[in-house]
Image (tube, rainbow, N blue to C red; front, side):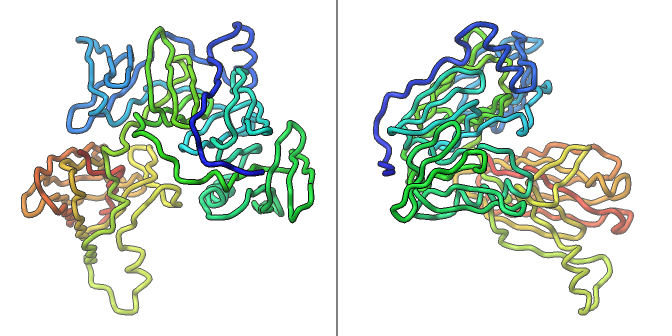
Length: 424
């Protein structure tokens, strides 16, 4: 099977809200959760350089978000919005409920009930049973079976790894392995493939997923509005977005054209191009000085005490007030960190506090400087809740973070600086 580069096309994607109430009920039963149909959805809107706004989500278009608070209705420029997060919990179906997850070349991910490929098209049904049809060159991968946490990392490695042919991914001794070949078509029960000029039929029940390698070309697209998460597990990279009559309509550069009930909305991440995570920067300086000098032979102790840089999918999540953060810095007194401020970024934000595992002990003295200018100074105790830090950097070119001893020596002095990021 050949995989042409993306070309203009006219996708056909059915409205998720079309059909009878019975169809929606069947979809909800299949997903294993009850769709939220309440007309009012309370959200938290984070903005760059401005106070967070909480209220009822009323409307969205490509340039504005409207939120009604207890005091008034506010129209917020979308260009200043970093995220819109639903405040109440929505039940998300577990992977074991049988969802098929389809990855597209624009990094969108769609939960579907069925998936078939052939004659240059991908067809199937979305999670609510609506049919869809798109050119096959818009799909980068499809995952048929649920994965364990360890297998999820391996799956992403396979999706991101360079290669020349399609990969049919299977399980062998509990681990993910793959066969590299050409996938010609995908039916409900089997795959037709070509390996070394020979035709093969593979039962789909044996296949974990497929990575369509030739489709991973550079995909030209306009800047997206953001990534929208829905209750069925879909994550859509939206280039257009609107909320009217309690329905969210959105489109993606890969050709998806969808409408979801407002009740299925979970989150809009609009931070792309507006924030730069601190964890993605290499520090200019990292210094750690223990309270008591360590002998030269105590290298392992020093490594344990030195700051830890916790990135996404790391095995050392930071917990503050019972909330787990996957990205951040965990450091002890006395630590000095220095970073170059990325060009064009003028603010710094983070969530700070002593780790739950050391509370109620601990007292650190935290100072943050922009170049030589003091931006923040405070003693933080283990009995204090975590707090949000929002600092105006002005034209500073370097950010320095000093974590020093408090009045109780070094007992429990372990601070977490979570979700730290530069903002425009």
